[in-house]
Every structure is written in C-alpha cells, then in structure tokens.
Image: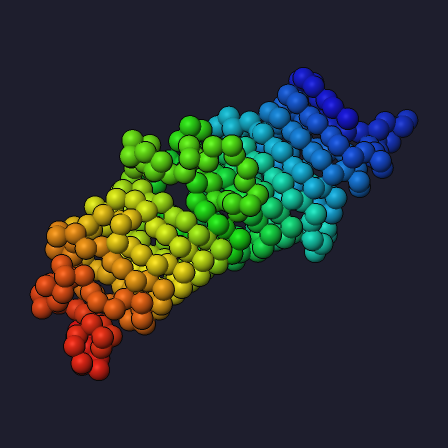
Length: 363
C-alpha cells in the first residue's frame, strides 16, 4: 500500500454509524507513506514487514518503531526536522498521546535494516531507550540529521548484538572525541569524503567496486578534510577490527583488546598519548605512523606479535612516559628511543630492553 501527498490526512479510522473503530489490515506486508505531514497514527497491521515514511511528522516515529516491533524487518523514516514542529511535539505530546505499544517490547524484533533521518524522538523521548533493547537482530543502522542524539548509553548500544554496519553521515567538523567500544563485528572504519560520511562496517557485508576512494586517507588531501578537529580516539574490544587509518589531528589514541588488528596508518605528528594494549595481531608501527615528534606518553602492553617501532631521528623527542611490557616480539628498542631512556621521567620496561636487569620500574 502506498499513500502520496495527503496534506490533511491525520488519522486512520473506520467509521461505522457513530462508532469509530481502528483500521486494520491483517495481510498488509508493505506500507509506504510519502508527504503526509499531518498523519500522526498508523493502522493495525500484524504482518507488516516493510515500512517507509518520507517527510512524515515527528510524532509518528515512536509509533512506527514500536507498533510493529514483532513484524518489521525493514524501517525507513525520513521525518520533518522543522524546529517549530519539534518544539511543539515536545511540549504538547505526553507519553499517553504518543501511541507506544510497550507490551510488545518483551519480544525480540526481527528488524534488520533501519534508516533514520531526523527521528529526534527515537533518541530523546523517555520511552525510547527501552524500545532499542528489542532490536537484537538489527544488522544495518543509518542515522542522519538527529540533533537529539547527544549521548547513547553504552549498555543500550552494546545490546545491538547483531549490528554489522553503522553509518552516521555528516559528523560535525567540530567533533573532538570518538569512543568505540564493544563492536565485536566491526572490521574497519571507513571515512567517505565523496559523500561526507563515516561508517563503521563489517567488511564482508560492504561491497564497493573501488574501495580506495572510501578509505580515510587514500590521499593526504582527502585525509586532511576528515574530522579535522578529532583529537581523541578510543577503540576497545572490537575483536574483528583489522585495519585502522587515522586522521592527522589525533592527539590521544587508545586501542585495547582488538585481537585481529593488523595495521595502523596515518601521519600522527600531533599525537601526544599512544596506548596500545592486548592487540595480538599487530606487527609493526615502524612505517605507518611517522616520527611521532609530539609523543609524550607511549604504552605498549601485551602485544606479542609487535616487532618494530618508529625509528626516525625526531621520534620520541618529547617523550616523558614509556611502558613496554609483555611485547616479546620487540627484541631491541630503536636507537632514537634508547638514547632518550635516561631523560624519560617515567618508564616501565621488561628486562630485555635494559641489559640483564630483571625489571625496571621507575615512577
């Protein structure tokens, strides 16, 4: 079923005499609603699997996601983001007026694909967080123009256990901190300059004829335009992450428990703090990160496959804190780092890096 350009259509009601009954479509499988700005309710449709709403009312978003929790496999919502409408909805609509069928929220939703454009209520309404717990089978999530998305509780995000692709286009150029944790299916982070978007993606599910144009830093010109103010990047417990290209603005990089991570790349002239822990597949930092002239703190812990570090003459010139522990693949520290050891204020090194001493630990 498809509805188009019904400017004054507000509700689904069946009128029988003086009694108004809710409209029901027992066999309806797909519903598309285009340009119906006054519509605030949806019909009963227990078998609905595909719902598309374009230029809809903000009020309809929660009902669209909750009413068909047990049947939807694909949901596309492109809602009006007019400021006056959003304010009006927030002030005038309470929880009872927003028809939310929370009795269905105890069921796992079959929803696999969700595209959200301008759906502020799905991130700001008091009932919205509980709704997200149903989406355990969600694979592909695209979020655009959601001003209300200021914070997403870690517990809720980690509940999306099937998520393989997360796309958040148009990240603000002012973004300074990006924190990614517990995305166990994530294999790469892609910065697409041509479409100005950032994606966390499972590489097996992402098909593109020419991937070179999608990877952050394919050219230095491209990389310099990617999140130009991003200063802090935290990535923890992303078990399948293999490749990470870093923007040059990074000042703090913290990577932990990414067991499949094989390589890092990017010219990190601004990085001041570099912490890498429990990344068993990472083999080298020698040729991928530049000379690290601004690096003040370096921590390498439990990276047994790591065999080489940056060796440039300016590397480690600003270093004040050093930890290299349980990294058995590093047999000898680079000469530029060895020459600096006496000047480093805080250091924790395994014995093999300081002659026959069993252990060094200075603080």
